[in-house]
Image (cartoon, rainbow, N blue to C red; front, side):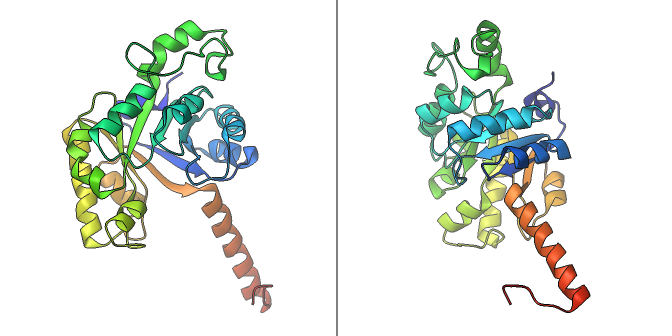
Length: 261
């Protein structure tokens, strides 16, 4: 089975969606709809690791890759996420070379890193059934994604991109704009310039580039700019948008008013 990292490294871009809801059904629908990967969000979403494990099952059961954004750059969070069997992990707010190196180390077994050795019992290894092959292969299969979202991270972005084991830089335009003093303005010219710097750093280091769309920059623009992974959608936004469109159309048809009017 080809994992998404292989596809991206071969120059074939991919689309993912955020799983914000702790709903196996919603995650399964995203995977069945054709998203190449589903990013289970433990930074902003309410799910815990037990629920997230069920989302991993739902996503991979439909043939998509299961990725996870951990709550913070912490070795405990990272090893628990990896033990669920994900093939991609996103680390938020990486702001220095040292933080990037620590994240990479937390994803690797000794002697290359510090990941705890529970391979004989973890779900990722079939609960020990194929732990030796997992340990031998996971480093090559795992997509390690560092988010650039802070002024410190931006100032160090070229050095972060050069860290061995960092596979992708992922620009977080909403947090980055807020941290640069432009809250709610991800398309501000100063923010756009900062994002362009991160893009150049990733491509200059030969690393993959990921990001999300904004009101002023859609998926087509990201693909044209050379993004390898785009995550424009979430289960929450897709559900809300579809529900709003449906109810608005009904009100226009009937001339009625909704409960919020």
